[in-house]
Length: 225
Image 1 (tube, one colour):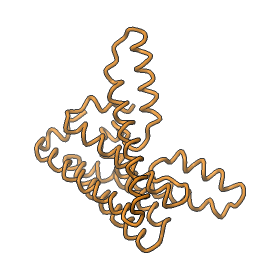
Image 2 (cartoon, helix red, strand yellow):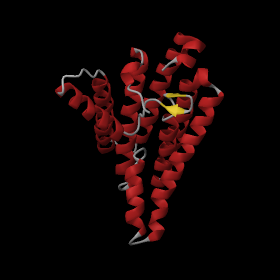
Image 3 (cartoon, one colour):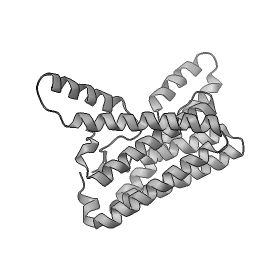
Image 4 (tube, rainbow, N blue to C red):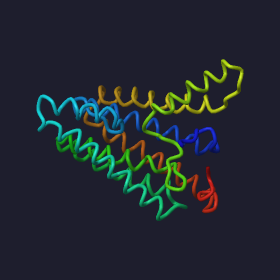
């Protein structure tokens, strides 16, 4: 079960919101650069896979490649997180930054599929940053569950039952929506530079993660919720 971001300390909350912002920016940039495919929204790519299979099965290789890249990123990220749990956040964000840099290079070379595949792998990796015992505790690239929890929180409030988790889920969704808007703006203003801006965002989050893990120490990294 995915936990709410509000259960973490303020520094980790900001990191989670920053990751959601990055995911939104990556999704918007990838969508605009690839003509309608997503870097982190695999439900949308699965729908595109089904739609592409009907008129032209050969075209379906595009969403299939993106989904495969995302899953590969999740697998690699889980292996890294399990191998180095005390340095999970900075280690994973270092690889996320590397993949986004590769994506930016491929974009400059004119490969939109290479760009979005590399970015999708980065988003798969990012989903392991907040995890415990092999399970994701904060989903930073998908918001359907967060909106369901938010709606349940609203219902609890209307029923007179306090639900402090509601705010956390709403903030997570807001961060992703703002990131998507920022990605769309960046692509519109400077389409050739937008992929590099994703890499710069990830580099900034890597600095935050490094501070968190150095400040918290090994035990804090192992025992966080």
